[in-house]
Amino acid sequence: MKKMILTLAIIFLIPGMLMACPTMGVYHRGRLHYDPVGPFIQFELELYIVHWEHFVTAVEYQLLTPTDPSHSMFLILGVTYPPKQSLMLGNPFGGHSITFWPPCSGYPDGYDLLATYICLTVVPCEQMYDYPLVIVPHPDSGELRGTFYPDNEMFKIAGLTTHLCLHEVSVTGDSWGAIKSLYKE
Picture (cartoon, rainbow, N blue to C red):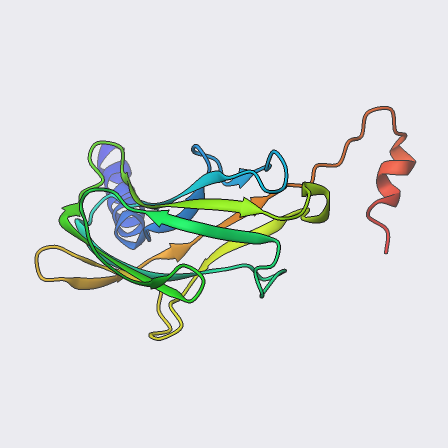
């Protein structure tokens, strides 16, 4: 029985761990959503990479706002970087590449801060319900990827979606029929 369990673990767990793809996303204090206090009030969002097996030396990506391609409701006023950042090319909305030395190790938590965005919204949250910030491939290379130490080999990254002004439906005091009517076409 023990041999069978060990064999199944090797067959299913090890390939799954090797195929695990690092993720990159925009967070606000550990959450993938943020409700701005109001328009014209600055706030910070952090770009993190979650990884376990790479010493990351560079990343390339683009930040996309699909519901607002002109970025008229959400602005990035500035970007700050951790001390190990060594070179930055581009900007988050147009295609952003960042290099790091010494490499980002993910030690001890399995994630690293890549950049901090100083942001601003210009409209109230009621006009921005479920406003997505999506990490997508860099427009020049068509890849969402990073490189790792020692030979700067490339690896793929999975981009996450963050929501500003997450819309929550309140169901307090509503009947079941009223709740079902929300989902009718």
